[in-house]
Length: 447
Image 1 (cartoon, rainbow, N blue to C red):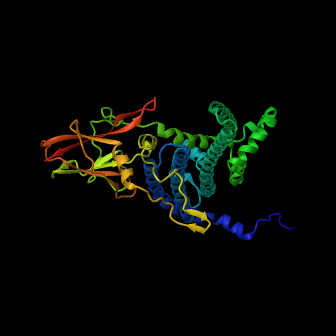
Image 2 (image 1 turned 180 degrees about the horizontal axis):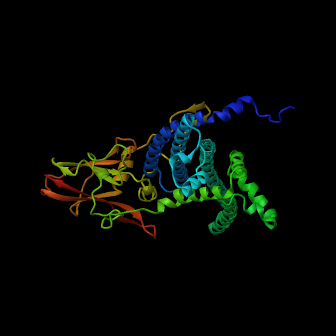
Image 3 (image 1 turned 60 degrees about the vertical axis):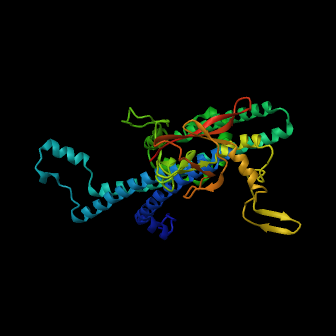
C-alpha cells in the first residue's frame, strides 16, 4: 500500500534536524540584534536632532520604536529558546546514559513514590515536549515581530489616506480648511474603530469570526485590514499555531507580550524619591560640556568647552534647532535661504540631459544667512547682555554631527568662581509675534 505522505524526503529530514538550524540562527541573531539596538538608539538621536516636527518625523519615530521593540522581543525569545534547547540536549544526553524510570530505588514512602510516578514524565516524553515547545517558541517569535510590522503598515496606510484626503480637499475646497479637518477626523475615527475590531479579532484568535450575525459586517473589514497589514505573509504561521495548540495558551502568550512590551515601559521601580526626574536648572548635564560628552551623545541646546574654564576665552556652541525654521522665515525677511523646501533632490532633468549629483544646494549668500541666524540668539553672562557678533557656522564632531553656530567669548573680566551663561532665542507667541525666550542655561567655574 502506497504512503499518503507526500512530504519530500529532504523536508522530512530538515524537520527532524531543524534544531541545528534553530540554534545556529538563534545565536547569530542575538549577536546581531544587540548590535542593531545600539544602531537604532543612534538613529533615534539623529532623528531628534536633524528632523523637526511633522508627519515624516512621527512616522520615522514609530518605525524605529517598532524595530527597537521587535529587537527586544527577538532577544528575549531567542535567549529563552537557546536555554530550553540546552535543557533539551541535556535531557537527550542523560537518556543515553539511563532512560529507565524507577523511583522505588529512592526508597521514598509509598505516597511520594506514587506521586512521582504520576507527575514526573519519562525522559522520552520530556524530550518530545521540549522539542515541540522550542520549535513553537521559534515560530511564535517571528510571528510576533511580523505582527509588529503589520501594525506599522496599518499606520502608514492611515497616514497616506489622510494625506490624500487633505491634498484632494485642498484642491476641491481651497478656502475651507475646517471641512477638510472634519473629513480627516471622521475618516480617522472610522479607521480606528474598524481597526480595533480587527485587533480584537486577532487578539482573541478569531473570536469575532465566530459571531454569525457579524460576519457580513466584519468580512469586508477583515479583507481590508488583512490587505493593508500584509497579514498574508504570516497567516500560515498564525493559523497553524491555532490548529496545533490550545487557544488559551496562545491568548495568554499574546497578553503576556502585550503587557510586557507595550505596557511595561509605563511602569518603573525608582528608589530615587528625592531626585527629580524632569530636567531642572539645578542639574549639570554631561552633554553640555565638550570634554565630558561621549561621541554618540546629543547636545540638547548648547555646549561649552568644559565645566571648569582655565583660559580667558570661552568657546560656545549653539545647536541649530530646526523647529525654529518658522520664526526664522518670519524674522529674516531681507534674505531667503537657497533651500526652498525640506526635500532636496540630486536628480536633475534639463535640456542638457539627465544628471545625478549630491542632494545639496549651494547657498547664494552665506554671510546674510549667518547674520540672520546670529540675530536669532542672544547671549548673557551673569544676566549681562554680551554684545557678540563674531559667529561662525560649525558642525560638531561625533556620530550625530549637530549643526549650529560657534563663537568665542572673552571672559577675562569675569570673577573667579561660578558664572552663568544664558542663551535666549526668538519664538512666536499665540499672536504670531516674535518674543525672546530662554534657550539654554549653562553654569561654569572660572579658575
